[in-house]
Image (tube, rainbow, N blue to C red):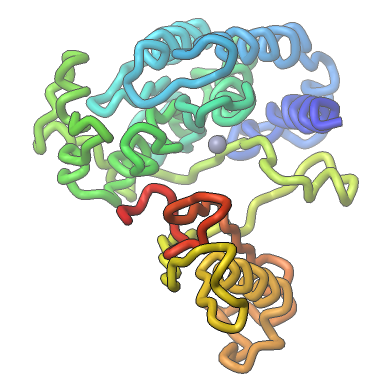
Length: 352
Ligand SMILES: [Zn+2]
C-alpha cells in the first residue's frame, strides 16, 4: 500500500511540474499556448521512465549491504555526488560541487544576475532509508529542467534556476542536521566544521580527506546572499500516513515540525524483586511508564491540562491538538535484570 501511495504522489508531481516551472520562471507564454504546449507532450520517457530509473539507481548507491545508507561524505555519497552531477550536466546545467559537498546545477536563463529560483533536496539518507527520501526532490527538478532543455526553453528563462543536492540533511554521522543547507543559508556558523562524530573525527577532517579546503573562509563563502534568491521549492515524499488516510495525492507544506529532544533519568530505589513489598517500593520503571502515558495524554489533549494557556506559538488549541506529537523512543533500566527492581530508568546512551 505504501508503494502505491508513493508512486502516485511521484507521478502526479512529475506531470504537473513542467507547468509549475514555466509559471515560476516567468516564461512569457499565453495561457492557451501554454496549455497546448503542455498537452502536446508530457515527456513520459524523461519525467517517468528515466526519473524512476534514476531513483532506483541512486537507491542502489549505499554504504551498506542489504539496505540503503548514505551519510555525509561517505564512499557511497561520493558516488552519488558524481552521479547527480552527471545528470545535471545531461540536463544542460552548469554544475559544481561546493566546499560542503553540495552539488549545484544552474541554468542562468536570460539574466544571470536576476534572483534565482532554487530547487533541491538532500542526497544523504537515514540508515535503512527509502529511495524517495531526498532524491525525489533532486531527480524531479533535474528531469523538469531536462525537458526545458529539450524544448529549447532553458536559455529563455527570465531568471536563473538552480538545482541543489544537499550533502547533509539527516545528520546521521555527526548528529547535526542540515550541514549542507545550513552553510548555504548561513544559519550555522563556521564552528560547524568542528563538530565531531562518535570517533572524534570532525566535519573538517572528513572534508579535508576528500580534498575540500574546509577552512572557515571557504565555509563562510558558501552563504547565498538572500537578495540573490527569488524562492525555493522542495518536493519531498510524505513521511507520514496523513495524505493517504485522507485520499490526497499531493499536499503543500505550510509548516514543518520543530523538535525538542530530552534525555530523562528517573531514579528510584534498587531492590530485590522477590523480597521488597509493593508498599515499600520506589520503582523507576513503573514511574517512567506512568510518565510516558501522561505525556501521550497531554499531547493528545493539550487543552485538558491546566498549565496549557490555550496558545502555543500562535497555534490555537484545536490545531495544536492535531499537530502536537511526542515520542519516547528509547528506554533502558539499571541494572536491567528480571529479578531486580531497577535503580533507575533512562536513555540507554546516558551514563549510569
Ligand atoms: Zn528527507
